[in-house]
Length: 306
Image 1 (spheres, rainbow, N blue to C red):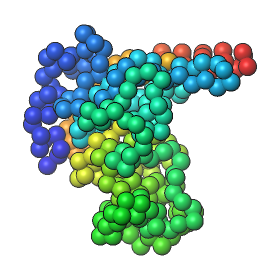
Image 2 (cartoon, one colour; image 1 turned 90 degrees about the vertical axis):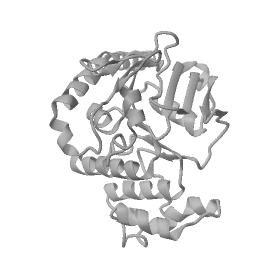
Image 3 (cartoon, rainbow, N blue to C red; image 1 turned 180 degrees about the horizontal axis):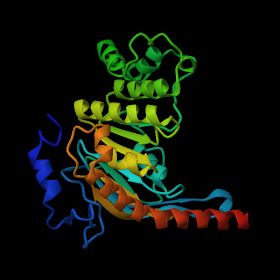
């Protein structure tokens, strides 16, 4: 049974928005709340981003990466953040992770302000962060060891689920790129996070491996009941994975729109050719096109001024 099928209340909340906005299924999106512009979670919010602004100051030049951003992410929800390069997607993720401190506003987890990194928020980056001098098994055990919470049965189960059983004594450089990213998932899940923060983790993979990794991630998410924030610039990837797709503007990053993806779960590659998928993809492409052009113009202007 799919996660959405097993939680009818959540599906009802997805379909019936009242004061928190409304769904327009013809266009495949839900408008933001007219009162406060907040992108609402479909259920009880686990993550709350409240009026987030982040300004960098390289060499004295103020660069506003994200400005006045409001977002809620529900417990066990899968949210993709989609936007052009340089729009502040990674900045938002790193503020949730506790790696960056907001210039203004705050990030709340279960109502408590984020004041630094925490094992309950696990992160996977575009390039793997496996320790090259440790085996895959040792990498998986590292996080739990730091908390005196190693569960070898759990690690063996994760290695089997990700097709890495038998490779626990291998080193990262001995594995393919796809296998390294699977090892990253094992490392992440072995630490038992409530929230999985993923920053374009499959962007460096070939198309076939990327598709397999996406399906594997959904299988794990279905079984593990985690909350996922997944950053991508790939429209098809966002639609395939997400409950909701948050589309960001060019810098300074703000929320342009939120797309509710009402495609039944579990999902596999067969949905990629469905009419509903094509409609959502069309809508997302329309939203992102102008922002990508703006981002390119910004980059060209900065290059000329440098």
